[in-house]
Length: 340
Image (cartoon, rainbow, N blue to C red; front, side, top):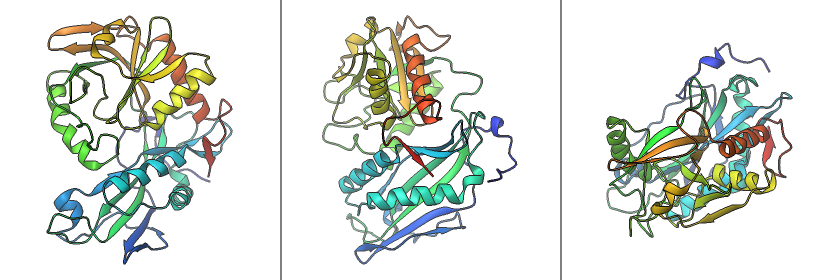
């Protein structure tokens, strides 16, 4: 497959229109057979449910070129499962998991010329999403829906190397107990836009959100889960019913135990504990792990021993091991890598 003539190493993390996208419509109680189409534009009625009541959800995953030249995706079955569960919570008809997997394969294959070459630092980002498409004026779920997957080549999340971030403890709440924090709904991200703009204005890279009920426990940021390393080299991550179940976080916890032989635990983490950790990172699809060097709580600074210059040693091992699996340099656990 001849690749597109792009300067792959210069790509940023932004949208570039590719050749094909996958589309399937739900009408009269069932999903149609779906198809790959050329048109990147969506035409909607002015009263479409997604525009009135934000009935929409999405996923994010990547396709890679491995060291031996294969095109692969990383754990798309978990994206299919998470989107299925999100749809149920939003009263949307879930897109079948087997069809989700087939759609991923079809759209990557159709856009294989856009999958960046190995070693370029770039990947093909996939954005599956679904929305209520028919006109709804009363507050109720839509009757018709559209499921789509777009693709776009993206560069590394960090340009010029990975530098630890500085976060602030937010005065806003990301998600309420028994709310929608555990699903990948568009409305959750809309809620986080004002707090992140305010954080950026104040010179911070991201927010640390605490639990809305007591404001004493660590939850996550607007778009990533936390992962911490204790001073005795144990990997811990917050447990909460309002945290999005990150696929990257779950994978890193497995890597910590099974590849690196470390203790790894998901549990409630009080904010008071944070000052005692040796390392901190944010984990997600975009950057795998973003190291955190400092957290500021209303002027009080928590500085991690790993510092502000580079990843901590354990965080770095986690990052290198997981990316090694994704890029084909290390043998993966069964089912983690799906070849296109």
